[in-house]
Structure formats: C-alpha cells, structure tokens
Amino acid sequence: MEMVGDPVGVVEVAVGPPVVLGPGPNGERRVIPINGGRVTGPRLEGEVLPGGADFQLIRPDGVAEIEARYVIRAADGALVYVVNRGLRHAAPEDMDRLLRGEPVPPERVYFRTAPVFETAAPALAWLTRSLFLGYGERRPDSVRIRIVEV
Image (cartoon, rainbow, N blue to C red; front, side, top):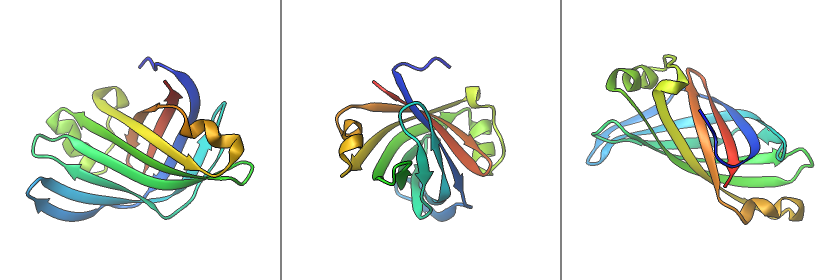
C-alpha cells in the first residue's frame, strides 16, 4: 500500500479483549482497552501509556467507526494526547474474522485514521499544526498504525 505524506512514525499497541455493549440503534458498540505500546519512527519515538481505549461502533453496513484515545510519552518525556478517528471495513467474511480476533491479511482491509495530537511540549508543537493520516493494520492482539503528515 502506497502512503502519501511524510513519515512520522509507527504506533504499535497491545489491545485487550473487547468489551461488547451489544446492539444499539446505530450498531454494535465495543470498547477495546489499549494496554500500552511503542511509537517508532523518523520524527516521533516513545511509549504508548496503558489506559487508553478504542471506542468502536460497528454499523449495520459492517463498517467500523473507530475513535481511539491514548497518551504517548515521547522519548524526551513529553506527553502527547492522541485522538485517532477512522474507518475500518472489509468483505463481510473478513470483518467477521477480525471481530472474532482472527488474523486477516492487511491488504484485504481498508483501515484509515486521522490522528489529532495535543501537547504542551514546545519541541513537539509541530504535531498540533498539521493534518495526519494513519494506515492501520489490525492483528489478533495488537494494532499497528503508520502515521504520515499530509
């Protein structure tokens, strides 16, 4: 998959089992705990702190609306708050496999996000001044998102 933009870093997080709230008027609501992780890359390095979560709505058409909220502790100790919204969808059989926690080849899944960053650190203020795009990959117990500045 070709990425458009300047590479920032790769976020890799460990996730816990989903908390499934069940079907509602807009679809099935799920909350997936973020148990921690790493950010590695040419412009951002650090640790994803445990305690975040990915709040999802699985719509009746099978599209997952994603809103992940978490904190990164950069290599220099600065904290960055992240709100990462996006969409994930695939063929119905692949989405069923993903929702069961089974592996699906990433090229078979559309998974894009638009992360927004907030920080008080002057050295990382550039994160608050641009738009970013994330190219996601869901694995059985983790998520990997390659982030570029556009």
